[in-house]
Image (cartoon, rainbow, N blue to C red; front, top):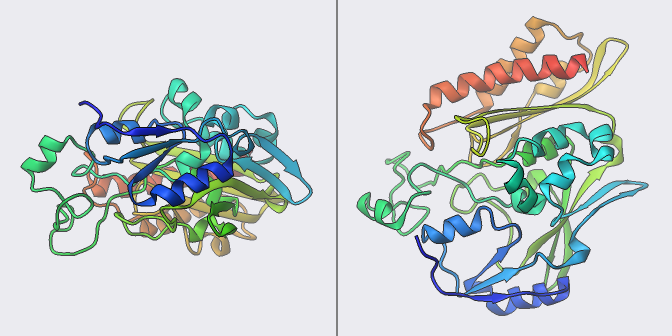
Length: 326
């Protein structure tokens, strides 16, 4: 599958990148690591006239500690996050999640910003042009029918990145730059829950930094994912847990899911349910039931929705038990 011709732009500063986005917003794509964009362009899911290669913008790289927490440049590689001693000590759920993304080679290329902005995926969407044409296309690309839910008008493509559920557990915020300047938003408010319009990001804007608050440092963290192969594959169900314990009881805890909804989601009620309790098999099983109710998997992957929902239940139970034992 060949690439459609395009013009490559290589800005050296954030201001230059924002200027290029503003100028070509209707027909441009941002390339950070390229591990998702390039395969999608080969499948003719995107055919931009311009590709904005931002890999050489130094101000968007690195992990910086401050009094209020940590700022991570959006171009920081997943490998750097995985192997950061500071993040592993203070925000372990993030390093665990980063370490499960794809394979070592792809983690060397992939970035935290790219993972946050990863396009939603579906069995009917992530295919070649010939395959999609034979199926009559879909709502997300060139058609008007959702093959997952044919009776509706909503796209149910699943959000399948690994680091966002970990970041949700850590109350992360992101910085977005555009022609009007920068704005800072909670990551939980960044996603729309709509498969074909999954994020609140304008065509002339770019994610520049991720912020982790100081008050979330020191929480134990676990990430578990379901995938067909032990490497490379996207998650078909993923669970992140961040937990703080005191005197044998849970002082605070957060659970988030990925790959089973059109957006990564915190499990509502999990924090209230777990706070103040001593961990046990019964408590872990009950919070697993809460997570399974939050998960709404459909036929967006090769595994059945029923199996993926059940694995959310199982993985959540295992993850909270593991977090409580750290």
